[in-house]
Length: 320
Image (spheres, helix red, strand yellow):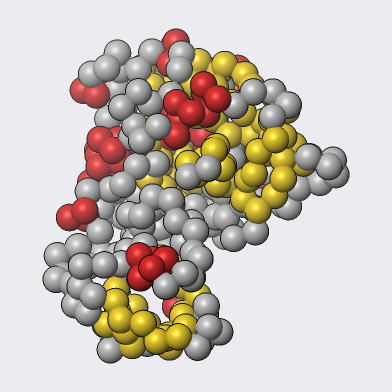
């Protein structure tokens, strides 16, 4: 994954515990283009790389903006963003990658955001508005104080394109997802993002929707039981590295990424659980057993996430 040299241009407190961080190129000029739903890696400090969705208008080429909820019980990345990054600080970021893009031919888009899951929805709303597309955003938060982007979302509410739902910490008082998603309207594509309980509820409520019309992105690992291949026992297999001309054994108790690291083949990883996409790798031959939660059917014809994928064939050939 190509990396970019950037600087922290602005930090804005958007809501209680939520701040936006604006990155601009260290040397000026434009950044690589992105589509709504994309995210970037932020190298906060050595050994601490985290993924954050871009929330600014994709038409903006001079900056990337991410929103970060300070998680006291998380892995430490969000706290480091809040506590360690300062305006003017040099930082390494990745080029954007996207596993949560808007369907180009959909006549209508339904966006569901739970808490900080509103981040990619802000870019989606901007992209859809600029195209004159039909969309509606439901934004579920605990309270007004925990509601990020209030000014921007209030403008959408005023235009009839959004609604804000406060539940006071009790999901039963919030948006009725089952009622909302009971009857999928023709052609509508659904997008949802938020904390684990919200993701589970939205996934369950939309399980009957037509294939290919439901899109989601996890900020934290989904329940392992819901992942492809989660129940399959691990077996040993071999990997062939086409460019390095190496043949390596992947034992049942190790991942491809671990074996690569042990043999000094660099592959960047972050979540190690198949939901961030950092270790995306092209494969050339063999049949992978995908165990990630981000790749779609087209992606899986060409790529694997080596932090979690196994192989159905004796050998899996990688473009490394």
